[in-house]
Length: 349
Image 1: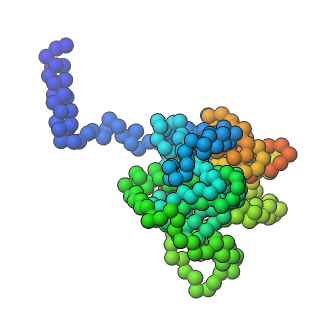
Image 2 (image 1 turned 135 degrees about the vertical axis):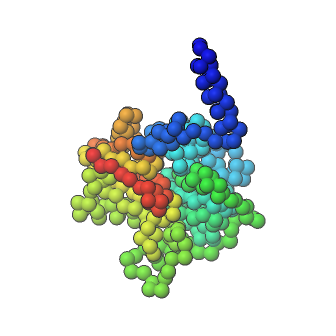
Image 3 (image 1 turned 60 degrees about the vertical axis):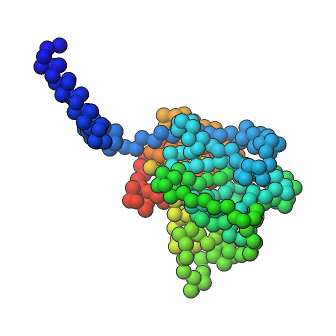
């Protein structure tokens, strides 16, 4: 090494030390990583199999009570995210169990939440005193900063999928939480009263939205299923998404929550979608049938009822409906966030 080379290395080292001291760094060394050509999700496609998940949940019910746990939940941690409690890069999901006679005490938090019921009957979720009885396939909304608790006055275990925008809210450092003074928030009415009031195409003329979240807390599966059948009858089958209905805020037509999109999809037996991708991270849960989901570059997943599949953002995927029976699945994603920020993008093959 000649003297000039040694001097150059010495100057470069001094320059790097000066940058470090002043807490600055050269953009040109990392520009393509900070501004990539396309999204690079860290999450990977992964399926949680209900046969095993159910076994683990019931075992958890034998080892800890709802009172001890506050929420008896097994978090679905995406293996591509190094142990973070995220099912995709920006969403959280978990499987919750409540047993007869239990109460999961009331609290509230700034994270929005959904419940999608997988098995059992006799349990309920109460949101600001409005009780929503839980039945398989029901979609239940828990808006941010609302008092909510779960209870069970039936006779069999009840299990459901929780979905929250927890990673988004925590990234923004906007998380707040508060415990209610007693186990239960006082009940005021049944959720079906709100469904009766708001679920039709004709609404009270003087009703104005007072929240970004839907005033309907519980969307019964039987109604969602009827809507899918009506659209199927009229050949409303999107080549990339199948027969697709979204859960809507009845007063605005928008999503039921400002950060989470929820929908129900039907893939006819023997029919398959074309490759599709979008920036949203998506979580799929099978209700009926045994669809196969092909994730480009990550293989195929043959799914059964109650299996949960994470589909990372900007990942190409398609669904085959299976043999002999239509496939029906619930999906939730972070699509509203991208839409509000002007960042939503999709690609259809």
